[in-house]
Image 1: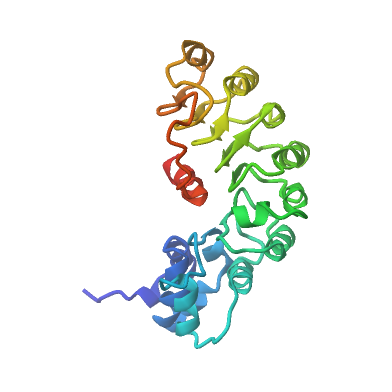
Image 2: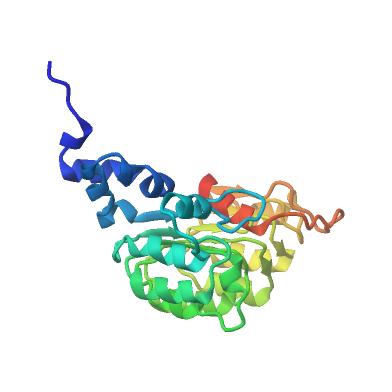
Length: 276
């Protein structure tokens, strides 16, 4: 029986396979296998789902950016330049994008203009914390957006306002290092189709949690574990959440007795994405 070779695989099948191998392999391995693999790796369909490593600029460890520069003999390449290069490979077809730490608003502007098909988007704290944040206007251009992961609750009201105006199919919100006051809780309630809400390790008091539980009628998944501001065994909370298929509040307490501030908010962001 004649041995079949990978390079003889139909082009669309090869693209389908390579679209699943991940960003690191697409950049550092696949293009160097053979000409057919190199050609297939340039197809925008291979770059529809882009989950960047959390950190691309570390002094004490080798990152994907370091290996990329070494592989392609590039002396200087910033986080912004690398991120825009990878996102550009999708030629507007990117539907899932998790941006790395260290990005500036320049990347956010680029994504807003170049990724009209986004369904899932993750924005790190570095972008959201900017005083002149472009995030609300970015969201306003993402009419197909269904899921959003935020590295902070900064500017949450304005972001949710844009979601309500532009994203008719929006259903999932995850916020790391969140502080939920009445204004933020009321804004969340204004998302009529929200089904998944991840507020793990948020600071949210009993009253504001009640606003969400009473107002978000379509929730099927609410992760409020390890929060500060209410007790996990509060009978009223459990009763109000009884309509939610998956409600998690383990570890939540009224007061922060240990005041543990050693939690990396971006770990929560990625954890929420992976576990749901």
